Image 1: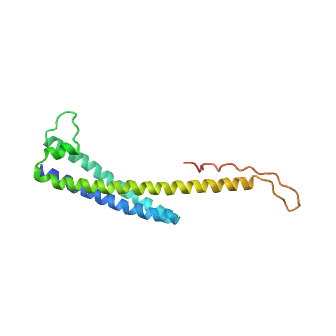
Image 2 (image 1 turned 90 degrees about the vertical axis):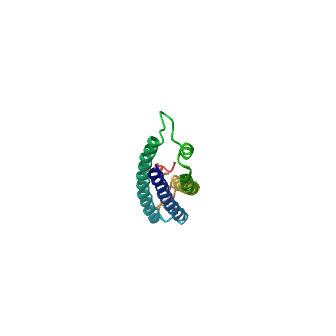
Image 3 (image 1 turned 180 degrees about the vertical axis):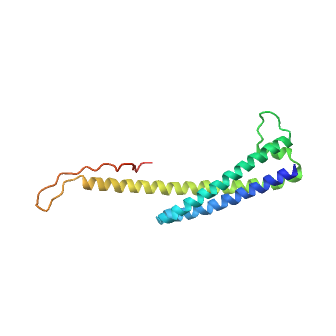
Length: 168
């Protein structure tokens, strides 16, 4: 069991490393959104995708380790092996490392949620600005204008481009 718990602790630290890298990418993304740097946003999206794959692999490994621990701890039936039950059933000398790894993971996850919300708000503000600009353009092109001959042109109604919607 000690080997399984140590493996879980190491995996939680690996996931925390991945999350810390993601947090750094989100901070860079925040700056790219503020400075409207589209190239950087594309590059960061690819980096996030790569991290997502690493995270999914960790998730699968964690599920495997938890199933192994479930058997080692003789957890029967439909009882969920949650963190509290896990800490309660493992030997006492293994608890501090597991709790520390979990706390590290939770801390960085909270920071990710906050940064992601901030970036989401920036994206929403940008979309509202784009929609407002499009409305101004539509209004400007929907009114009559003078032609070279001195006559008024007919207002041109411009619809939304095919496949595009400024609304989210």
